[in-house]
Image (cartoon, rainbow, N blue to C red):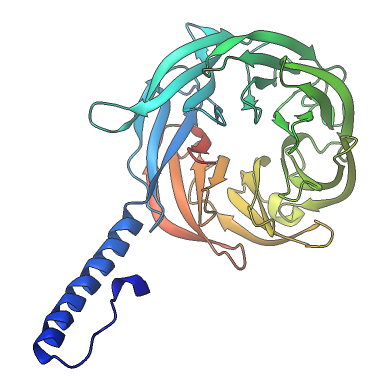
Length: 398
C-alpha cells in the first residue's frame, strides 16, 4: 500500500491519537478502494477487423480490462464490407481499414471518438480506391504521411499520401512484383504480396511475398509517399513468407512462413537495409502437422521485452511460443497453446504484454490469455466473446 496513504502519528495526546487512528482507518480504506477501482477501470479499446463472410457486417469493438484480462461483448461500430486489416494513425485518432466501399476495394479512413452514450465510435472520413484486386494488409508509417497496402491477388504494393488531418489524399504509386518461385504448385506460380511495414528508422519498407519466397525491400520517401526497389531477403524455398516483425533492438527480423509453418530469423543491417538469414525453426513439429487435414501459419508477434516471439498455426489451431536467444536472436519453441477456437488468423499482445487475444476466424471468437512475463508462456484466461469472422485484432495504444 502506498506510504502516502499514512501520515506520521503525533505523540502523547490520547484523544488526538484516537481521532488520528480513526482517520488512518478511513484513509486506508479509501486508498485500497482507490487502488482496486483504478485497476478495474483500466480498460483499453480493442478494434476488430473481419472477413467478408455472411455473418460479418463490418468493424467491431470490444474493451479489455487490463486488471483481469476480461473482454466486453463485441459490438458493431462501422458497417462496411470485409474490413480485414486495420491500422491506426501514429499521432491522430484516425483508423484505416482495407475494405470494400460501394463495391470498390478501398482504403477507408475513420475518425475515432465517442458516441452520445460515451461509447467508442467510428465516423467515416473518406476513402481511396486501391485497385489491383484489393488490399490484404495495410500499414501507416511513423510520420503519418505514407500508407502502404499489400495486394495478395495482384502481387503488388500500393502507396497512398495521407493529409495532415489524417484523411486520405490519393494513391501515389502501384508497384507490381514479378515472377514466382514455383516450389508449391498453385500457391507460388505468381507473386502474392501479403504484408507491409517499415524499418525502425523509417528509411525502408518491407513486403513479404508468399509467391516469390522473398521479403521485398523498398527505400521509402515518406514525405512524397514514394517507394523505390532496394533489395530482398530470401526464405527457404517453398516457405511462403506471409508476415514479419522486427525485434525491439532493430537488429533482428522474424519472418513467418505460411506454407511450411516455420519462422526464419534474419540479421538486419540498418545502415544498408539488408537482411541476412541465419535460422529457420519449425512452428509445430512435422509429426503433429501430419495429423491435420489443413495447416497454414498466419500471424507473428514479438514480446516488447524482446525475450519471446509468438506465431499462430491454423489447422493445428495453436499459438507457438518461442524463447529468444539474447545473444543471437535465434528461437527455441517452448509451447504450443490451444487458442480455444478454430482457425487463428490473427492475434495480438496488449500494450502491457500481460494479455494475448487470439481471434478464431471459423469459430467466430476472441479469446483472452495470460502472458507470463518471466517465461512468456500462455494460460487461457476463461474469457471468450463472440465476434463474426475476426481476422485482425488491434489495440488503440499499440
